[in-house]
Structures are given as C-alpha cells and as structure tokens.
Amino acid sequence: MLDLKHGRYLGVSNAVSTSLFGHIEGWPAPSEPAEAAAAQDTQRAALQSLVAQGLLTEAQVAPMSTNALEMAGASIHEGPPAASGFPSMRRSLQFASSVALAGWCLRFCSLQTIARSITAHRERLCTPGSESLEAMRPALLAYETLRPFVFTAREKCLLDSLALVMFLAKDGLLPRWVIGVRTGPFGAHSWVQCGTTVLNDQHEYVRQFRPILVV
Image 1 (cartoon, rainbow, N blue to C red):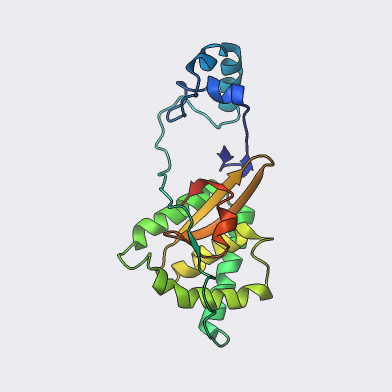
Image 2 (cartoon, rainbow, N blue to C red):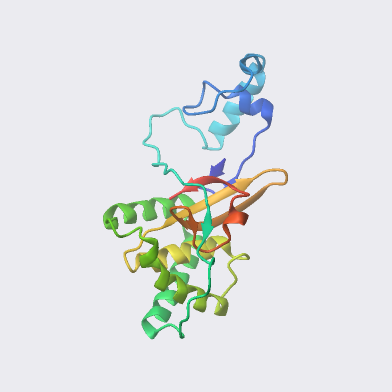
C-alpha cells in the first residue's frame, strides 16, 4: 500500500492480507476462503493498526479516482533517433521551470496533494488531442536533450516523472504519471506513460513493477 499523505509504503503479510477481506471496500478475496475465517485475532490487530495510522477510516469519504493503465508495450526511445538541434530558449525555460516546480512540490507537498493537483489539472485541460503521442514527440525530444545537464532519470525517477508531466502540461499534453512496486525484493519506481508507450524509461524495465498509482 502507498501512503500518499506521508510518502511511504506499507506491506502486509499473507495472513494479514487474507484476514482483511470483507472489512475493506474493494479488498481482493483470498484464494482460500477458510484462511480468512481462521485469522480473527490477526484481522482485529491489523485493522486497528491501519486505522491508527490513518490508512483506513470508517467514515464515508470520497475516494480519489483510479485510472486504468494499459500494459507497457513500447518505449519512446525505440527506433532511429530523431535529428534535432539544441532546444530553443522557450523550451529551455520551460524545462527549468518544470524541474524547479517538481522539486519544490516533492519537498513541500505530500504525494496526495500532488496527485490531486495533477488530477484537477487533467480535468480542466483534457481535450481530444491532449493525449496524442505524436504531439508529444517534439517536446519529449527537447526534454531528453536538456535532462542530462541536471540529473539522470533512473537516479531521480520521481522528480523526472513529475517534471516531465509538468513540462508536457505547458503544451496542453497530458500523459499518465505512474508509481509501481514489486516484491521479493521490494522496489518502487515512477515513470510517465501514454497509452502503451513509456515516455521516460524502457518498457521492459517498468513491466517489472505493478502500477499502484496512476494519475
């Protein structure tokens, strides 16, 4: 589970996971129904702990909307590189302001606030052409040209993804910001995706992670 308010992840054991079915709206059913019935003490302790941490509530609240994400099947990097000169001054300033804003948001805002802000921005600006991959390509080329002067995408995946989303939004383009996780061992990663195409990573790599947040 991703705690958006506090920017942390929480994993639960198999026993806890199966015990929570029927008590949390939308929680998946265990493969063996008998397992849930045999774990009342585990269930009670787990529920109390999650409520105490603010991850569960008994109140009726409006949940954040969830978005379906198609499985990544391609990377924007595939194919021969496009020829391009150094980005224009406008693009350079657009890049600098996007990185600065993304960095400020990550330092001073919760992931919950960031996710809700991006969601509201999408709702205001979404048009038939706002999710066009072809329309994004020129801006993506400029972004990728400028990024190595500031940071590397793999080392700063969350900053890179938020900065890219903000960079494209300045052109009215709205890809999806994704956070995914994997277990055994645990790992987390963030990327940007348009349809089945990953915009700032290799699709083979991001498919190792199960999307847990799609904005």
